[in-house]
Image (cartoon, rainbow, N blue to C red; front, side, top):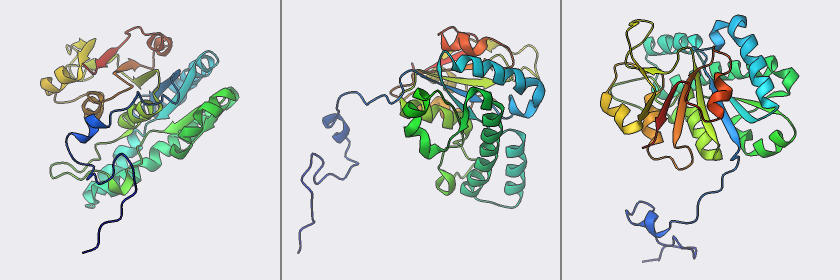
Length: 269
């Protein structure tokens, strides 16, 4: 019997699934590609869909902040994503197809937001351009990228749900984690995470600070942030907290970037 061909390396002969392998191969800390970067997610449903009234002053604020801070803007999808998913689910589309369809909407929003920010050097970039961020930031650009992660047709299928679990909040978090960013801020149309939807129940309580484990144990019926972000946060290396803020209120973004809790902070532990 012929022997399997091997290349000499520290992982020679490994299956890559052995339990103890990762501990044995633990190396120095990963390189943080953009350690001063603030990743700011602007929700489609939470901001962009409101149009001129919300987006014009918000873009003025982001543009001014970009002169003092390194910023990457990540766009959500919003109402049009909900529409295309509703149609797709009704037609029996698989989860991966729904992911492909919804990505097109957040891409459209990235184009529009980059144009709104053009006088501040707003530049629409693609997921594949993320490794060019250090250069783009040094050139004074304000990069804008769509938030849907590129799982596409490979999105996780589920027996109980059809809607893709990795959406634009998750995409913003994953971008921040991979780049080793300074912060990950999720802009919504409410003041943070509540025990219930405050638009339905005015008596809902605002949760100012909570760990990912505590939040999962609450098993809330609804949340303002994607559940996948909470799951991923527990195992993250670079991003150990996410802050949810109301991006309709001026000044909240800069305060969050400066470390102030102006909404809800979800910590890894």
